[in-house]
Image (cartoon, rainbow, N blue to C red; front, top):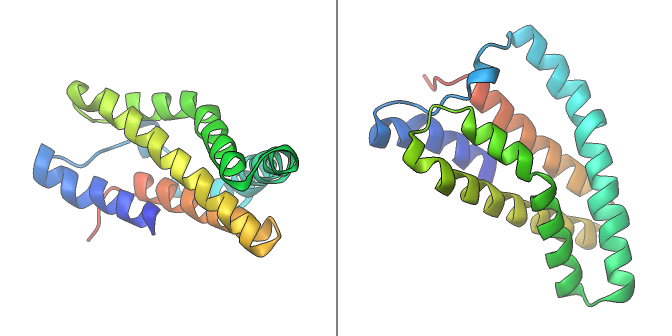
Length: 154
């Protein structure tokens, strides 16, 4: 739901406020045929599964063994956000956002990453399995990638 809202903001709100949609330049040059295998194979196997095992499996599990629930979720979510810091900066810097919005957009991306890390930790803890957090992580990333690739909502 957050990913859909983010894509809608970039495609509907941004044009109304900025006079143009937010475009992620590198992805705008990717052919649809190249995006499909990326979303279907690389995204889950090359990014989502390793990250979920690392952050919601190993890190969260280790933190829970030594700390209370609130600390474990907060620390794992903060680590997840910081892990994605370079990606957040790179992504924002390669959009069509006006320069004055770059720093707030990077800060916003890091907040979304922190919240996402906490939500996925909550899913992992509520279900007792990584399947829920893997599914949510993949869906979020897939929606963002597809939404950034296809800038028009007609």
